[in-house]
Image 1: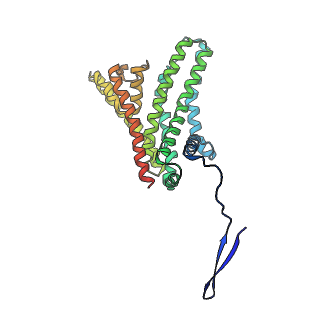
Image 2: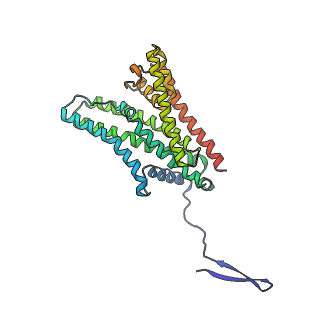
Image 3: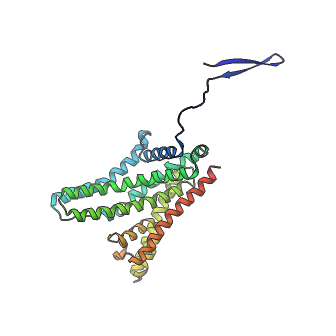
Length: 302
């Protein structure tokens, strides 16, 4: 209950000081690690609309279902026809479903960071105890985890279905492990690129359009150039052109080291030596994305 304390100030005026009962916090201080985990958990839940309105759940959940349904159909076909192998390799699934993945990252990267920028709440995060590195790591890890769930879930459906169809256990386990490595790298790469683009603007719509443009235009341009190179008989440059799109980067990397069949024209994937360059490009882009996010939020948090 508020308590009034009248204070005389002269000339017939009277000022009142209201004691509204604020008290200091005497509980445990959980520190940066707890705050970082909480931000990670909240951001991961938000990537699927959990804890938000029904409207916010529709798109991510729909995209999750769209990712898994083809895998379930393939499993049903393999079981019904008693096939000796799955219709699609584990490492090829994410490449085939790249449009769905691009749409997901385009919708959720701005959701993760744009509202904080728009409503200028980032400095409040940094007031205490979270620092810039904590915020960036939590957001990056949350979006990469959400994307890994999206891309790994259908692989799990394929794997379980393959075992139910009594396909070779060793071959399926090896393929499943290779697929998980591939989508883990894809998740880190796409999450970094999506967050960097989305952090440039507080407008979510602009962020969505920019992410879609970067992912689709780069892939389209690389595919066209690779097709022209094959037509002109310059197949040796096809792997090098693949360095300039996130999708083809993952495709080339997994075809060089994970036994995947390349989606490049003529199935001309990079050699082991060229694959090393792909690995360096992927790791460099991931590191660059993290560095750009750190630089961006150091400025925002001032």
